[in-house]
Length: 186
Image 1 (tube, rainbow, N blue to C red):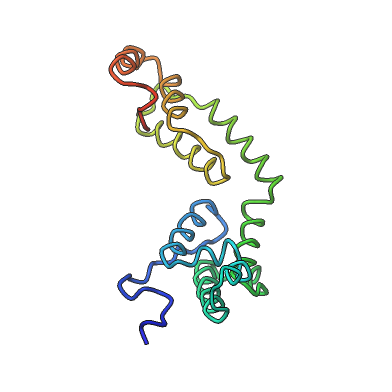
Image 2 (tube, rainbow, N blue to C red; image 1 turned 90 degrees about the vertical axis):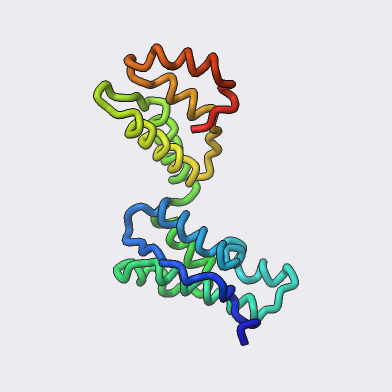
């Protein structure tokens, strides 16, 4: 009977993060990881019909779809559940949440443009710890990446070096001499 199980028996059941309407980007990344770990992301991303076209048994793909939908539903707080209740497939459920909380492609484009501008305007405050500033930069980068933007490590490192407070001015040239800046990662 264990052979027919969709989930591998050697993996523990993951703790499903509950989305309450805030922090969609982080929640969706966590859910994607959970769905991938159970080999269900293709069903969510491509849909059941696309997975069926890949010569998979229709019954098995329906079962995977139901399991993926179950995981997504578990990850949505009760006050948001009514928004996805009518969805028939996991792909539809995912897309409803994505459009409502991340926006359609036009909204995403505007948000991404705003994040790019914020990234360029980021600067370290005089009384800010370097770790806190680094976290602010990486938070912005993570949000850009969640919208599909490719932000290369070299750009991040250069941004951080350019925008450190003046008290670090003496350190930056030393680092640039010692390390190949194209290979330094944040």
